Amino acid sequence: MLKSDGAGADTGQWDVGVVGGGPAGLMAAEAAAEAGARVVVFERMASAGRKFLLAGKGGLNLTHAEALERFHSRFDQPRLQPVLDDFPPRAIRAWAADLGIPTITGSSSRVFPEDYKSAPLLRRWLVRLRSLGVVVKVRHRWCGGLEPGHLQFETPSGVVTVQTRAMVLALGGASWPQLGSDGTWVAGMEGQGVSISARAASNCGIEVPWSEFLRAHHAGAPLKSVMAWVDGGARRKGESILSEYGLEGGLIYALGAELRAALGCRETVALHLDLAPDVEQAQLARALAKPRGKRTLASHLQRQAGLAGVKVALLHELLPREAMQDPVRLAAGIKDLSVSVSGTRPVSEAISTAGGVRFEGLDEGLMLSSRPGVFCAGEMLDWDAPTGGYLLSACLASGRWAGRHAAAWRA
Image 1 (cartoon, one colour):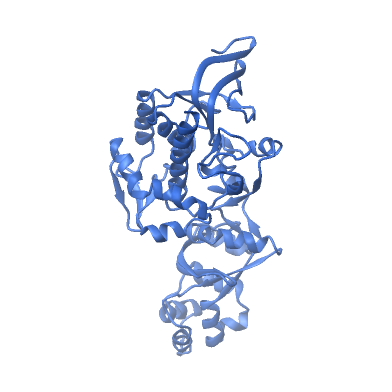
Image 2: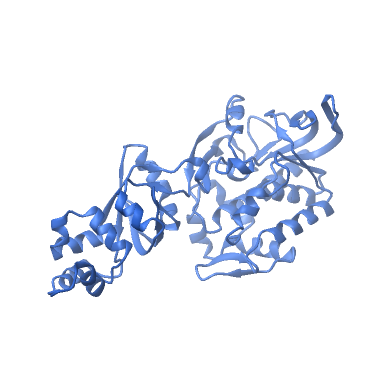
């Protein structure tokens, strides 16, 4: 099919062409093939599922086992609810089990493969796709056309033209450029009139101008059991890590949307930390007012407030010296320590990206209203969610939804 003269054509008539071999694209291919469509997947990298494999490096978090109402609340896009209901967490677990991959639920209700690995699941998934007749073509970079009957791809052997009746775009965000998700598709689609909201780093660290002392002595230290909030926002309890550039971790990721919105209006934003969320401020003040004798302040804080290590270091970093000697002001600082956030880390370092193809330009089947036969799925859509299995859940669910509707449309 590929000619060495720099031009080529795929003369086979495909029902559905899927552009992107990540979780959303592979699920779209599976759904379309199960509906009877002849499906081809185009992946720009040398193999499919590279980001999926990397996501499983520390344990593949497939989905989350919490109650559905709470599960839905994690997503900022109401239009996703019917899509998520169509392929909810229990269905994702059943799908994995059908591949021969049993799942377990962790203490935080996160769902993982029993062996925590992504490679075995991906291998079995690709075998299933082949059994359904799905063809995966690698090293095919989409040239940007939005006409299903005339798709063009750059390949090592030149430009290839492919004919499909429908197409599903699952091009990813921009958070892992080295794995193929670089967001370069945005300019091309905007140039063809597709409305796209600005991409932004999501589930990423925040920047705080720490002192050299704090960076040198506490970078990498976990900040456990703290409450955090942005002015006017909900309080969240969890953990984070103090890094050389600021803070990162699940608690910070959960506040990402609020921090981005606030940073869009001003240069710095106050992130509030409660370092002792299980103790009332008045109780802390009384405990800290007790005579400390010859004990150091650090020993006094550990004995009376249960604070040590990086938490004490943060108090020294952010409170005036005189406040450290005043039990009432110190207790107030422990319960509401203001951290000045100057920005978020670059998109290239983020776990995911917010923004993308606006739902206003899509019909109920995730087809572009302005481009009949062109469907979108996965992280390229305009939605956001924290880590914890939510990102992968939505990619799988939207891929399944778009693939099934693409197969129905071509018929």
